[in-house]
Image 1 (cartoon, rainbow, N blue to C red):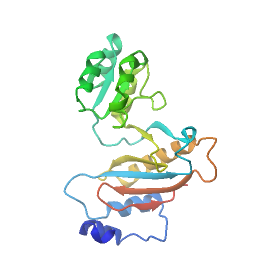
Image 2 (image 1 turned 135 degrees about the vertical axis):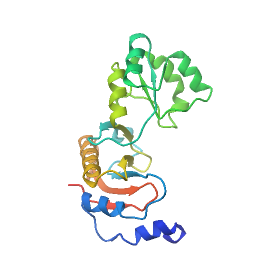
Image 3 (image 1 turned 60 degrees about the horizontal axis):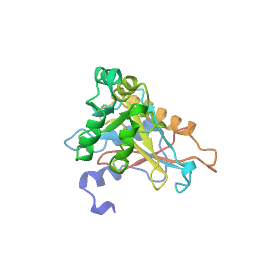
Image 4 (image 1 turned 90 degrees about the vertical axis):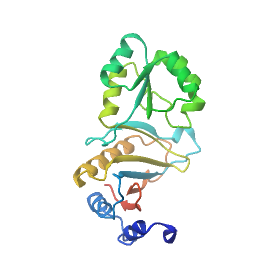
Length: 228
Protein backbone atom coordinates (compact mmCIF):
# COMPACT_ATOMS: atom_id res chain seq x y z
CA UNK A 1 0.00 0.00 0.00
CA UNK A 2 1.14 3.57 -0.70
CA UNK A 3 1.25 4.51 3.00
CA UNK A 4 3.94 1.88 3.53
CA UNK A 5 6.10 3.41 0.79
CA UNK A 6 8.77 6.08 1.12
CA UNK A 7 7.86 9.76 1.25
CA UNK A 8 9.49 10.18 -2.18
CA UNK A 9 7.20 7.48 -3.62
CA UNK A 10 4.10 8.98 -2.01
CA UNK A 11 4.98 12.44 -3.32
CA UNK A 12 5.29 10.98 -6.79
CA UNK A 13 2.05 9.02 -6.74
CA UNK A 14 0.14 12.10 -5.54
CA UNK A 15 0.90 13.72 -8.92
CA UNK A 16 -0.71 10.92 -10.95
CA UNK A 17 -4.32 11.05 -12.13
CA UNK A 18 -5.35 7.41 -11.77
CA UNK A 19 -8.49 7.94 -13.86
CA UNK A 20 -6.61 8.58 -17.11
CA UNK A 21 -4.07 7.12 -19.49
CA UNK A 22 -1.35 9.58 -20.47
CA UNK A 23 0.29 10.00 -23.84
CA UNK A 24 3.85 8.58 -23.85
CA UNK A 25 5.40 12.07 -23.76
CA UNK A 26 3.08 13.18 -20.92
CA UNK A 27 3.66 10.04 -18.89
CA UNK A 28 7.44 10.13 -19.26
CA UNK A 29 7.56 13.86 -18.45
CA UNK A 30 5.49 13.17 -15.35
CA UNK A 31 7.74 10.45 -14.01
CA UNK A 32 10.88 12.50 -14.75
CA UNK A 33 9.37 15.18 -12.50
CA UNK A 34 9.04 12.85 -9.50
CA UNK A 35 11.47 13.38 -6.58
CA UNK A 36 14.75 11.69 -7.54
CA UNK A 37 16.92 9.38 -5.41
CA UNK A 38 20.68 9.83 -5.14
CA UNK A 39 21.45 7.36 -7.93
CA UNK A 40 20.69 7.29 -11.65
CA UNK A 41 17.39 5.43 -12.07
CA UNK A 42 16.41 3.31 -15.02
CA UNK A 43 13.15 4.02 -16.81
CA UNK A 44 11.17 0.81 -17.17
CA UNK A 45 8.09 -0.31 -19.04
CA UNK A 46 5.72 -3.11 -18.06
CA UNK A 47 3.27 -4.36 -20.68
CA UNK A 48 0.31 -6.59 -19.85
CA UNK A 49 -0.42 -8.90 -22.78
CA UNK A 50 -3.67 -10.57 -23.76
CA UNK A 51 -2.31 -14.11 -23.75
CA UNK A 52 -2.67 -17.24 -21.67
CA UNK A 53 0.79 -17.63 -20.08
CA UNK A 54 0.01 -21.27 -19.25
CA UNK A 55 0.02 -22.11 -22.96
CA UNK A 56 3.51 -22.44 -24.42
CA UNK A 57 2.43 -21.47 -27.92
CA UNK A 58 1.20 -18.09 -26.66
CA UNK A 59 4.36 -17.09 -24.82
CA UNK A 60 6.16 -14.08 -26.29
CA UNK A 61 9.94 -13.88 -26.30
CA UNK A 62 12.44 -12.01 -28.41
CA UNK A 63 14.88 -9.14 -28.68
CA UNK A 64 14.75 -5.64 -30.13
CA UNK A 65 17.25 -2.84 -30.73
CA UNK A 66 16.18 0.37 -29.03
CA UNK A 67 16.88 3.36 -31.29
CA UNK A 68 18.31 5.49 -28.45
CA UNK A 69 20.10 2.70 -26.58
CA UNK A 70 19.64 1.80 -22.91
CA UNK A 71 22.41 3.80 -21.27
CA UNK A 72 23.45 0.65 -19.44
CA UNK A 73 26.77 -1.12 -19.73
CA UNK A 74 26.21 -4.87 -19.93
CA UNK A 75 28.64 -7.72 -19.46
CA UNK A 76 28.34 -10.45 -22.08
CA UNK A 77 29.61 -14.02 -21.85
CA UNK A 78 30.05 -15.74 -25.22
CA UNK A 79 30.40 -19.43 -25.95
CA UNK A 80 32.60 -19.72 -29.04
CA UNK A 81 35.87 -21.18 -30.25
CA UNK A 82 38.48 -20.33 -32.88
CA UNK A 83 37.68 -17.49 -35.25
CA UNK A 84 34.26 -16.94 -33.69
CA UNK A 85 35.85 -16.48 -30.29
CA UNK A 86 38.14 -13.83 -31.77
CA UNK A 87 35.14 -12.14 -33.42
CA UNK A 88 33.37 -11.99 -30.07
CA UNK A 89 36.40 -10.54 -28.30
CA UNK A 90 36.95 -7.96 -31.05
CA UNK A 91 33.28 -6.95 -30.76
CA UNK A 92 33.64 -6.29 -27.04
CA UNK A 93 32.57 -9.52 -25.33
CA UNK A 94 33.59 -9.59 -21.67
CA UNK A 95 34.08 -13.34 -21.31
CA UNK A 96 34.66 -15.89 -24.08
CA UNK A 97 35.14 -19.63 -23.83
CA UNK A 98 33.63 -23.06 -24.43
CA UNK A 99 33.99 -26.06 -22.10
CA UNK A 100 36.17 -23.97 -19.78
CA UNK A 101 33.52 -21.24 -19.51
CA UNK A 102 30.79 -23.82 -18.87
CA UNK A 103 32.89 -25.35 -16.09
CA UNK A 104 33.45 -21.92 -14.56
CA UNK A 105 29.71 -21.19 -14.55
CA UNK A 106 28.93 -24.58 -13.01
CA UNK A 107 31.30 -23.66 -10.18
CA UNK A 108 29.38 -20.47 -9.43
CA UNK A 109 30.61 -17.78 -11.83
CA UNK A 110 27.75 -15.31 -12.47
CA UNK A 111 29.51 -12.00 -13.19
CA UNK A 112 27.78 -11.40 -16.52
CA UNK A 113 24.39 -10.05 -17.59
CA UNK A 114 23.65 -12.18 -20.64
CA UNK A 115 24.93 -15.12 -22.67
CA UNK A 116 25.45 -15.50 -26.41
CA UNK A 117 26.39 -18.81 -28.00
CA UNK A 118 27.44 -20.11 -31.37
CA UNK A 119 25.12 -23.04 -32.33
CA UNK A 120 27.94 -25.57 -32.13
CA UNK A 121 28.52 -24.58 -28.50
CA UNK A 122 25.06 -25.67 -27.30
CA UNK A 123 26.56 -29.01 -26.32
CA UNK A 124 28.15 -27.09 -23.44
CA UNK A 125 25.43 -24.49 -22.86
CA UNK A 126 22.60 -27.04 -22.78
CA UNK A 127 23.98 -28.48 -19.56
CA UNK A 128 23.71 -25.08 -17.89
CA UNK A 129 19.95 -24.71 -18.24
CA UNK A 130 19.26 -25.25 -14.54
CA UNK A 131 21.72 -22.44 -13.72
CA UNK A 132 21.18 -19.93 -16.52
CA UNK A 133 17.44 -20.49 -16.93
CA UNK A 134 16.32 -19.16 -13.52
CA UNK A 135 18.66 -16.16 -13.99
CA UNK A 136 17.13 -15.31 -17.36
CA UNK A 137 20.51 -15.80 -19.05
CA UNK A 138 19.88 -18.95 -21.09
CA UNK A 139 20.56 -18.14 -24.77
CA UNK A 140 17.95 -19.00 -27.41
CA UNK A 141 17.60 -18.64 -31.18
CA UNK A 142 14.31 -16.74 -30.72
CA UNK A 143 16.04 -14.05 -28.67
CA UNK A 144 18.91 -13.81 -31.13
CA UNK A 145 21.42 -15.08 -28.59
CA UNK A 146 22.12 -18.42 -30.26
CA UNK A 147 23.64 -17.36 -33.56
CA UNK A 148 26.61 -18.11 -35.81
CA UNK A 149 27.21 -14.36 -36.03
CA UNK A 150 28.39 -13.93 -32.45
CA UNK A 151 30.43 -10.79 -33.18
CA UNK A 152 27.44 -8.96 -34.67
CA UNK A 153 25.23 -10.08 -31.78
CA UNK A 154 27.70 -8.75 -29.21
CA UNK A 155 27.85 -5.37 -30.95
CA UNK A 156 24.06 -5.13 -31.17
CA UNK A 157 23.46 -5.93 -27.51
CA UNK A 158 26.26 -3.64 -26.39
CA UNK A 159 24.66 -0.85 -28.46
CA UNK A 160 21.22 -1.20 -26.87
CA UNK A 161 19.53 -4.37 -28.03
CA UNK A 162 17.44 -5.92 -25.25
CA UNK A 163 15.95 -9.35 -24.60
CA UNK A 164 12.47 -9.88 -23.21
CA UNK A 165 9.98 -12.63 -22.43
CA UNK A 166 6.60 -12.94 -20.77
CA UNK A 167 6.42 -13.85 -17.10
CA UNK A 168 3.87 -16.05 -15.32
CA UNK A 169 1.40 -13.16 -15.17
CA UNK A 170 1.48 -12.46 -18.94
CA UNK A 171 3.61 -9.34 -18.44
CA UNK A 172 6.76 -8.20 -20.22
CA UNK A 173 9.03 -5.92 -18.18
CA UNK A 174 12.17 -4.21 -19.52
CA UNK A 175 14.31 -1.10 -19.03
CA UNK A 176 14.10 1.37 -21.92
CA UNK A 177 16.72 3.91 -20.82
CA UNK A 178 17.89 6.11 -17.95
CA UNK A 179 16.06 8.89 -16.17
CA UNK A 180 18.60 11.39 -17.52
CA UNK A 181 17.57 10.62 -21.13
CA UNK A 182 15.55 13.35 -22.91
CA UNK A 183 11.80 12.71 -23.00
CA UNK A 184 11.86 12.25 -26.78
CA UNK A 185 14.56 9.57 -26.57
CA UNK A 186 12.64 7.60 -23.95
CA UNK A 187 9.46 7.95 -25.99
CA UNK A 188 11.25 6.68 -29.11
CA UNK A 189 12.49 3.63 -27.20
CA UNK A 190 9.05 3.00 -25.70
CA UNK A 191 7.29 3.14 -29.05
CA UNK A 192 9.89 0.92 -30.71
CA UNK A 193 9.49 -1.69 -27.99
CA UNK A 194 5.68 -1.72 -28.00
CA UNK A 195 5.49 -1.83 -31.79
CA UNK A 196 7.90 -4.76 -31.84
CA UNK A 197 5.73 -6.56 -29.28
CA UNK A 198 2.65 -6.03 -31.46
CA UNK A 199 4.43 -7.70 -34.37
CA UNK A 200 4.97 -10.81 -32.22
CA UNK A 201 1.28 -11.39 -31.43
CA UNK A 202 0.67 -15.18 -31.36
CA UNK A 203 -2.08 -16.36 -33.74
CA UNK A 204 -3.77 -18.09 -30.79
CA UNK A 205 -4.15 -14.87 -28.75
CA UNK A 206 -7.75 -13.64 -28.56
CA UNK A 207 -9.07 -10.12 -28.02
CA UNK A 208 -6.85 -7.14 -27.22
CA UNK A 209 -3.15 -8.06 -27.31
CA UNK A 210 -1.60 -4.96 -25.71
CA UNK A 211 -3.86 -4.63 -22.67
CA UNK A 212 -1.94 -2.14 -20.51
CA UNK A 213 1.32 -0.20 -20.76
CA UNK A 214 2.88 1.30 -17.65
CA UNK A 215 6.12 3.29 -17.34
CA UNK A 216 8.04 3.91 -14.14
CA UNK A 217 11.44 4.73 -12.72
CA UNK A 218 13.35 2.21 -10.61
CA UNK A 219 12.06 3.59 -7.31
CA UNK A 220 8.96 5.46 -8.49
CA UNK A 221 5.27 4.67 -9.03
CA UNK A 222 3.93 3.56 -12.38
CA UNK A 223 2.18 5.78 -14.90
CA UNK A 224 -0.30 4.23 -17.36
CA UNK A 225 0.29 5.37 -20.94
CA UNK A 226 -1.62 4.82 -24.17
CA UNK A 227 0.70 3.90 -27.03
CA UNK A 228 -1.25 4.11 -30.30
